[in-house]
Image 1 (cartoon, helix red, strand yellow):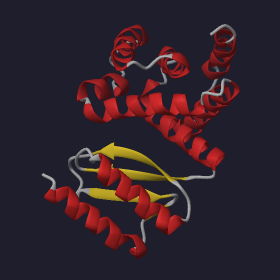
Image 2 (cartoon, one colour; image 1 turned 180 degrees about the vertical axis):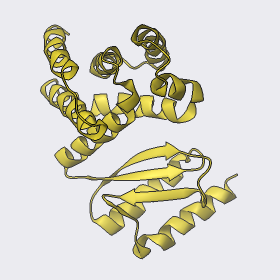
Image 3 (cartoon, helix red, strand yellow; image 1 turned 90 degrees about the vertical axis):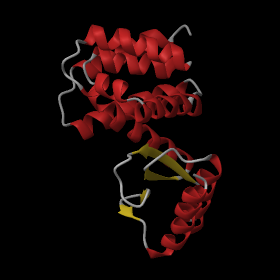
Length: 200
Protein backbone atom coordinates (compact mmCIF):
# COMPACT_ATOMS: atom_id res chain seq x y z
CA UNK A 1 0.00 0.00 0.00
CA UNK A 2 1.13 3.54 -0.66
CA UNK A 3 2.49 5.14 2.46
CA UNK A 4 3.69 1.88 4.02
CA UNK A 5 7.12 1.96 2.44
CA UNK A 6 8.24 5.37 3.77
CA UNK A 7 7.16 4.36 7.28
CA UNK A 8 9.09 1.12 7.02
CA UNK A 9 12.09 2.92 5.58
CA UNK A 10 12.14 5.35 8.50
CA UNK A 11 11.75 2.49 10.93
CA UNK A 12 14.60 0.64 9.25
CA UNK A 13 16.92 3.51 10.05
CA UNK A 14 15.93 3.37 13.69
CA UNK A 15 16.46 -0.40 13.78
CA UNK A 16 19.85 -0.24 12.09
CA UNK A 17 21.29 1.93 14.86
CA UNK A 18 19.94 -0.24 17.68
CA UNK A 19 22.62 -1.97 19.72
CA UNK A 20 21.06 -3.49 22.82
CA UNK A 21 20.71 -6.95 24.28
CA UNK A 22 18.49 -9.42 22.43
CA UNK A 23 15.46 -9.11 24.73
CA UNK A 24 15.37 -5.30 24.54
CA UNK A 25 16.08 -5.35 20.81
CA UNK A 26 13.23 -7.82 20.24
CA UNK A 27 10.91 -5.58 22.23
CA UNK A 28 11.87 -2.54 20.18
CA UNK A 29 11.29 -4.31 16.88
CA UNK A 30 7.99 -5.78 18.09
CA UNK A 31 6.78 -2.40 19.35
CA UNK A 32 7.59 -0.74 16.03
CA UNK A 33 5.73 -3.50 14.16
CA UNK A 34 2.76 -3.27 16.52
CA UNK A 35 2.55 0.51 16.05
CA UNK A 36 2.58 0.11 12.27
CA UNK A 37 0.00 -2.70 12.42
CA UNK A 38 -2.28 -0.59 14.62
CA UNK A 39 -2.02 2.37 12.24
CA UNK A 40 -2.91 0.08 9.34
CA UNK A 41 -5.72 -1.67 11.27
CA UNK A 42 -3.83 -4.90 10.64
CA UNK A 43 -3.00 -6.14 14.16
CA UNK A 44 -4.74 -9.50 13.73
CA UNK A 45 -3.62 -9.96 10.12
CA UNK A 46 0.02 -9.46 11.10
CA UNK A 47 -0.40 -11.78 14.08
CA UNK A 48 -1.84 -14.48 11.84
CA UNK A 49 1.09 -14.20 9.43
CA UNK A 50 3.60 -14.32 12.29
CA UNK A 51 1.86 -17.39 13.71
CA UNK A 52 2.22 -19.11 10.33
CA UNK A 53 5.91 -18.20 10.18
CA UNK A 54 6.42 -19.38 13.76
CA UNK A 55 4.77 -22.70 12.90
CA UNK A 56 7.10 -23.10 9.91
CA UNK A 57 10.07 -22.46 12.19
CA UNK A 58 8.86 -25.08 14.66
CA UNK A 59 8.47 -27.69 11.93
CA UNK A 60 11.48 -27.04 9.72
CA UNK A 61 15.05 -27.68 10.94
CA UNK A 62 16.35 -26.15 7.69
CA UNK A 63 14.48 -22.90 8.28
CA UNK A 64 15.61 -22.84 11.90
CA UNK A 65 19.22 -23.27 10.74
CA UNK A 66 18.78 -20.44 8.24
CA UNK A 67 17.47 -18.17 10.98
CA UNK A 68 20.08 -18.99 13.61
CA UNK A 69 23.28 -19.69 11.71
CA UNK A 70 25.75 -16.79 11.26
CA UNK A 71 27.24 -18.64 8.27
CA UNK A 72 24.61 -17.27 5.86
CA UNK A 73 24.99 -13.74 4.53
CA UNK A 74 22.11 -11.28 4.76
CA UNK A 75 21.59 -11.63 1.00
CA UNK A 76 21.42 -15.43 1.24
CA UNK A 77 19.02 -15.26 4.16
CA UNK A 78 16.85 -12.71 2.38
CA UNK A 79 16.65 -14.77 -0.81
CA UNK A 80 15.73 -17.97 1.04
CA UNK A 81 13.31 -16.19 3.38
CA UNK A 82 11.53 -14.47 0.49
CA UNK A 83 10.90 -17.87 -1.13
CA UNK A 84 9.58 -19.28 2.16
CA UNK A 85 7.23 -16.33 2.69
CA UNK A 86 5.91 -16.57 -0.85
CA UNK A 87 5.21 -20.29 -0.53
CA UNK A 88 3.47 -19.74 2.82
CA UNK A 89 1.35 -16.90 1.48
CA UNK A 90 2.80 -14.44 4.01
CA UNK A 91 2.71 -10.93 2.53
CA UNK A 92 2.01 -7.33 3.49
CA UNK A 93 3.36 -5.79 6.65
CA UNK A 94 4.50 -9.06 8.24
CA UNK A 95 6.55 -10.01 5.17
CA UNK A 96 8.12 -6.54 4.98
CA UNK A 97 8.96 -6.74 8.66
CA UNK A 98 10.60 -10.16 8.39
CA UNK A 99 12.62 -9.03 5.37
CA UNK A 100 13.69 -5.89 7.22
CA UNK A 101 14.80 -7.96 10.22
CA UNK A 102 16.78 -10.16 7.84
CA UNK A 103 18.42 -7.23 6.04
CA UNK A 104 19.46 -5.79 9.41
CA UNK A 105 21.08 -9.11 10.43
CA UNK A 106 18.66 -9.57 13.33
CA UNK A 107 16.89 -12.70 12.08
CA UNK A 108 18.46 -14.74 14.90
CA UNK A 109 16.15 -12.92 17.35
CA UNK A 110 12.95 -13.25 15.28
CA UNK A 111 11.26 -15.71 17.65
CA UNK A 112 11.76 -13.30 20.54
CA UNK A 113 10.33 -10.51 18.38
CA UNK A 114 7.29 -12.61 17.50
CA UNK A 115 6.76 -13.52 21.15
CA UNK A 116 7.00 -9.84 22.12
CA UNK A 117 4.46 -8.96 19.41
CA UNK A 118 2.05 -11.59 20.77
CA UNK A 119 2.40 -10.04 24.22
CA UNK A 120 1.67 -6.55 22.89
CA UNK A 121 -1.44 -7.82 21.09
CA UNK A 122 -2.62 -9.65 24.22
CA UNK A 123 -2.11 -6.53 26.34
CA UNK A 124 -3.94 -4.41 23.75
CA UNK A 125 -6.91 -6.81 23.84
CA UNK A 126 -6.89 -7.43 27.58
CA UNK A 127 -5.85 -11.05 27.05
CA UNK A 128 -3.17 -13.23 28.63
CA UNK A 129 -0.48 -15.12 26.72
CA UNK A 130 0.62 -18.64 27.61
CA UNK A 131 3.80 -20.24 26.35
CA UNK A 132 3.05 -23.85 25.45
CA UNK A 133 5.77 -26.35 24.61
CA UNK A 134 4.60 -29.68 23.23
CA UNK A 135 6.39 -32.80 22.04
CA UNK A 136 4.28 -32.90 18.87
CA UNK A 137 1.74 -30.78 17.05
CA UNK A 138 -1.55 -30.37 18.95
CA UNK A 139 -4.86 -31.24 17.33
CA UNK A 140 -7.39 -28.41 17.08
CA UNK A 141 -9.62 -29.87 19.80
CA UNK A 142 -6.63 -30.14 22.18
CA UNK A 143 -5.74 -26.50 21.50
CA UNK A 144 -9.34 -25.51 22.26
CA UNK A 145 -9.36 -27.57 25.47
CA UNK A 146 -6.07 -26.03 26.59
CA UNK A 147 -7.28 -22.50 25.86
CA UNK A 148 -10.48 -23.19 27.78
CA UNK A 149 -8.59 -24.59 30.79
CA UNK A 150 -6.28 -21.58 30.93
CA UNK A 151 -9.19 -19.16 30.63
CA UNK A 152 -10.96 -20.89 33.52
CA UNK A 153 -7.91 -20.37 35.74
CA UNK A 154 -6.83 -16.89 34.63
CA UNK A 155 -10.26 -15.36 34.05
CA UNK A 156 -9.04 -13.99 30.71
CA UNK A 157 -9.04 -15.07 27.11
CA UNK A 158 -5.65 -16.72 26.65
CA UNK A 159 -3.56 -16.56 23.50
CA UNK A 160 -1.25 -19.52 22.97
CA UNK A 161 2.37 -19.30 21.83
CA UNK A 162 2.93 -22.94 20.86
CA UNK A 163 6.37 -24.41 20.29
CA UNK A 164 7.26 -27.97 19.37
CA UNK A 165 10.13 -29.71 21.18
CA UNK A 166 10.20 -33.51 20.82
CA UNK A 167 12.67 -33.80 23.72
CA UNK A 168 10.35 -32.57 26.48
CA UNK A 169 9.22 -35.07 29.09
CA UNK A 170 5.48 -35.36 29.65
CA UNK A 171 4.51 -34.04 26.27
CA UNK A 172 3.18 -30.66 27.43
CA UNK A 173 4.70 -27.73 29.35
CA UNK A 174 2.71 -24.55 29.97
CA UNK A 175 3.88 -21.18 31.26
CA UNK A 176 1.22 -18.55 31.92
CA UNK A 177 2.60 -15.06 32.35
CA UNK A 178 5.79 -15.20 34.38
CA UNK A 179 5.08 -18.48 36.16
CA UNK A 180 4.74 -22.14 35.36
CA UNK A 181 1.21 -23.45 35.78
CA UNK A 182 0.06 -24.12 39.33
CA UNK A 183 -1.77 -27.09 40.79
CA UNK A 184 -5.18 -25.69 39.85
CA UNK A 185 -4.30 -26.36 36.22
CA UNK A 186 -2.55 -29.69 36.60
CA UNK A 187 -5.65 -31.88 36.56
CA UNK A 188 -6.94 -30.19 33.41
CA UNK A 189 -3.55 -30.45 31.68
CA UNK A 190 -3.20 -34.11 32.60
CA UNK A 191 -6.58 -34.78 30.95
CA UNK A 192 -5.35 -33.06 27.77
CA UNK A 193 -2.07 -35.04 27.88
CA UNK A 194 -4.10 -38.25 28.21
CA UNK A 195 -6.28 -37.26 25.25
CA UNK A 196 -3.15 -36.53 23.19
CA UNK A 197 -1.83 -40.05 23.89
CA UNK A 198 -5.17 -41.68 23.11
CA UNK A 199 -5.34 -39.87 19.76
CA UNK A 200 -2.11 -41.42 18.47
